[in-house]
Image (cartoon, rainbow, N blue to C red; front, side):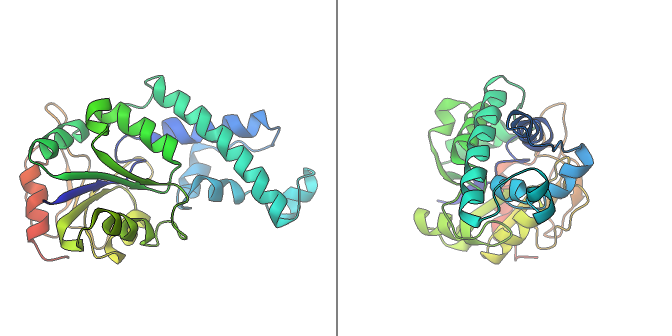
Length: 258
């Protein structure tokens, strides 16, 4: 049976602006780190794959010296792990509070795929506890239990490298022609396309202006009743209606890669 593989952040829920950004800023404040990312700052940080990697971007030599932070690599790695562990806890608290509802069409398309016997997975560079929290909140605990989850530091290189998608294909014993990926970012598209996969993009708050070359379909969301999907581009000629359906995703698999 075919498979549907979701990215997490920006796909299952619009997590970056309402979840990760405040969690990063609260973590910096708790640890006494004089950093507070604005919305514009974070728009640049999301181009960096992985939370620890985003945090590491502040550790310039001048910043480290000015704030009495460790300069050697091993100590910095330990510090980043401590920061990131706390950030993940704050983030999962935000998810549990209901602050990050699932994006339009996510639960609908997951229900349809489950009923049709499609295999379901999430492939994300975010920490696994964060991914599982978002997934359960977006689709419900019962549907979430049927997902394979590939997340965090389980591959050597994060998106835009294809590693996480190649691992998902290997672990699920799938060929690249057997799965459709739902992504929201240019980095995610490049990762999936480099793994030989077909991609549908649901643009999110920080990614609307990114380059989605290689995607088969780009929409504002998958759509729900009263919240129609807006087609941004349709290189594969899928021609979805107001809601992207499972038949549309099956059609993506039947079309040549753009």
